[in-house]
Image (tube, rainbow, N blue to C red; front, top):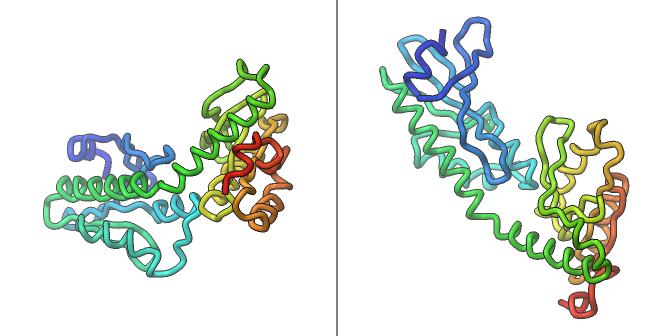
Length: 252
């Protein structure tokens, strides 16, 4: 059985996922920037060869965060990182690394180094998320200026359990409502949309009041189109100009 010696070989526990005992999922403490666990699977072959792979979940993670990875050029960042660490992205978009000879533990260490490098790349390329965080702070300030009595109800990063079983953070909670601040672009809107759909599809969230605030200061048309996307999902969708103090509303 593949898991018999895996704890000694890797230091991490695993769970068999095939009747033959040649395929397993490895549990590690490593996560992507949003808290998604880094996927690690192992498959054993004859001659003590092991394949460590992600079952395509790394690509799905980035797609879920709004990245378009539909061609080779856009996959290059992932392939480059993989190559530097002895791994590869196959034709099916699966990150994989095969052990050589009788050294599966070395291959596992290489694979973990590779996925950590990918997670680090994500952290380093979240500049647009930093801009989104700054906008969320502006929304908080605007709402508290309008409703100073609600200051005591402010919650930072409230979490909601989605239908997928994943916990999602919104930007803040105020007055019993959950808020998410969105810039009118794909990189900001797509992850927000994914979160909200997963949250509202869980029956226990039927009474959750979720509000989307769209930044409409720079591109009115893009903001209008983005609002349309969220109207059927969020409890309320509002433009930032409706709530912003004059000084903030005038920012261009």
